[in-house]
Length: 233
Ligand SMILES: [Zn+2]
Image (cartoon, rainbow, N blue to C red):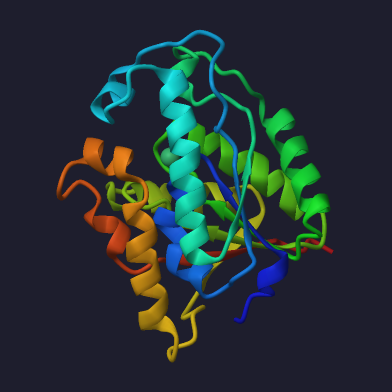
């Protein structure tokens, strides 16, 4: 590419998605920022099954420790963390605490603050939180001149037909998606992959819940798509 690292902003639905899906690219772009949308803690100390599998007593402990994990992982990659206070769907009992418009507005604020030149967003596969963040982030991005790159959501991208469904939805919405090949310089690729491996290990609570082979996809090659609104002019 190369990315303008200092002005690259990666949007992450949860505290781990950006590093799982673009950790090597982040290692190649020191000074980038990672904004996690669902980094808030609920008012009551709920105890969800997922958090229990991660080894947490309740949601307050989970979010406190997961933010620490995220900062440690991003430190390994030379990136900065921005944590927004929206609630993960596991804390809203099937409802949603946030609308597309509210998330898009919050993303625009961070883009302005970081003087963002390149925005990386999830393709938004499978999980309702990922789909919501995808829609909001592309709304925030494609309405101005910022370059917009979508990353394939690690783990979910392996599920049958999901990447294809998103590509169909994109072109139906007037957005072209073109593969972005080899965004990391070949000379630095192995160093970046090694840094990503170390960063991934920082999310110890999540890795525990995924199990020994539950996150193998995280260390498979990262894949990106450049998004561009089709010019009808
Ligand atoms: Zn996620």
